[in-house]
Every structure is written in C-alpha cells, then in structure tokens.
Length: 353
Image (cartoon, rainbow, N blue to C red; front, side):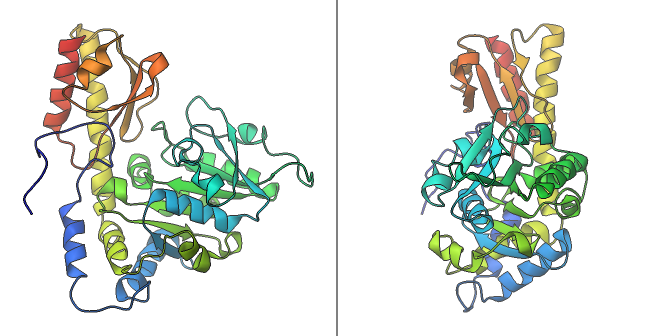
C-alpha cells in the first residue's frame, strides 16, 4: 500500500495525531514471528507484569487493554458496586470526553466538581463526598484524578497523598487516569511509583497511545483489595485482546528502558518552547493579544487568542478550541513534534496577530 496522506502536514491538536515511535514498531515486529497462546497467556504479557512491578512495586497486576476509555471504564467498574459513584473534576475525561461510557457501559454515576486548574483537593472532594447510607443517593466510593490533568497541570506527590488519605479515611478509593502519566513523570522528574503506589493510589490507567504507542493501555491494580473482577470485566467490556502479545510488546518497549521518559520529556520540552516563543513575541511586540489560561507544566499549552485568529491559524496548523466562548484554545505537543514545527507555528501566530 502506498502512503495515503501528506506526511509534511503537522499540527498541535492532539498527541493522538502522532505516529508510532520506531522502537515500538520494532517491538511489534519482534513479537510477530511464530505462535503464542492467545488472550494474554503469552511470553510478552508475562514479561509485562515484571516490567510494571519494576516501576510500581511488587504485587501489582497489569491488565492490557485497547484504549484509554476502556482502561478507565473497566478499572473503575472493578472498584465499585452497582450503586457506587465516582467523584471527579468537571474537566475529567471520564466526565466529558468518553461519550457517556462510564454511565452507559459501567453504570457509574459521575459526581463532578468544578475546578479552576483541573485538580481536586480534599476540600473540593467534600462537596460531593456525603450521603453514605442514603438509599436515594449514589454512594461516593471512588475519587478519580488525572495526572497530568486535562488542563496540562500536575499534582505533586504530597497533593496526591492528601487526596488518598482523605479518600481512605472516608471509606473511598483513589483512581488515577494516567493517559499522560509519562509526561507527569518526566515533568516531576520522579519514578512512576513515587506519585502512585507510594502515595496511596489504588488503581490507575496507564497510557501508552499518547506517548508513542500504536494502541496500548493498561489497567494497573496497585492495591488488590481495591479491585475485583477484572479477569471477567475486560472481556465483558470488549477490552480483552486475543493477540494480546502485541499490546504488551508496545508497553514493554516504552517501559523496559527509558523510552517512555525520552518521549515525554521531548513532548514537554516542545510545549515549553512553544510557550516561551509566544511569550518572547508578546515581550517584543511581534505577537499581540494572546494570553495563557493555564500553567504549562507538561505537554499542553492553553491560550486565549484575539477574535478570528484561531480559525486563520488553523489553516496552517490544526488544533482544537477548548472554550470557544472565551477564545480559549489547546495546543498539544507530541514525542515527534520538532523545534521547526514549534518555530513555524509561533511565526504564523505572529503574522496573524
């Protein structure tokens, strides 16, 4: 098959737009020869358990799945009874970007809390952490946070520990959506377990697709007492891969060495370069009318633009509106974003403002 797309087209819409890292493609090819037992009884999925134990601690269990929605829905479903509810930030992916899958597939009530920066605090959790024993209210039994958040911000280990302690003291569990967990590890310059296992996270979704994988995520159970039924729920939710070795091989490629960090550090650095370029333009007057609506702490830049500029800028580089009413946009960088991509984007923004 010949290439069907223009490979020169670049954008800042999503880290899902990028291709697959060559080392991940090589890992898939290496796993391809011969036969292996299906549905996870293969050498690669067995090795993956050892890799996750290295990063998150002995006794953890990893359940490879196809995508982030599947990881979140299946992981949360394993943590809750039918009457359970999840407290999450209003911006959380499980609340606004999964097509109602937590509600429709898993039967989970989302109790969402508005936040300015995408982060929950114990005080914000308490807005919905009430009503236990009330048969008329869905029971809040899990707190779900995202690291890094949908707004590109980061939780410190101490902030996660405070949330975990707060949740556990009230009989709740803590779930972490780690679609961009590698970007958080790179930005914090910490081992993965330092802001997960070691600070009280019970179950997490580990994201690979946004960080160089073809399509590979995992539900990672850090505390076996917090999760039940994943052996069955993965199939029930259509997330059990028959040829699981190819998902596991991708995650091994990311995690066995430092590829997950190399990719994430680069994406974060490109976001920092983009913001710095815009700030320099604002300082010297070559860019006008642009503001920033969030701190740039990982691989996303959130900005506000003058009227009409977003649509003109999108003629050259695709990106998404975040809040069109406020002219707020999101610019995402990937493992394959180049300095030339960033500089060309900043130059086009300067031309339009």
